[in-house]
Length: 113
Image (tube, rainbow, N blue to C red):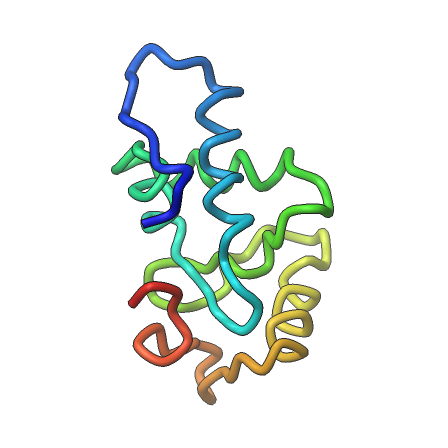
């Protein structure tokens, strides 16, 4: 388990929850992916996968946001910001392979799986 694992505190401010989640994301090695739910669980906030997305949206470029995918191993669509294509390009540059249907095999490419 990552060293950033925290005990869930239901009264923790969002900023500290986000920081815990981003600390976990920062540990995902190149060429591996993790799911939003996995990040929430490892940070000590299970069942808060959506908060991982909010944390990543506020994170900046120093966090490997592109290594986080949905529970199916697919890139979660964000709308018209162009990051969906960028995420795939960044993952492929790290050697991650996508199936024909756009899904990543989590058993092969998943972090800690």
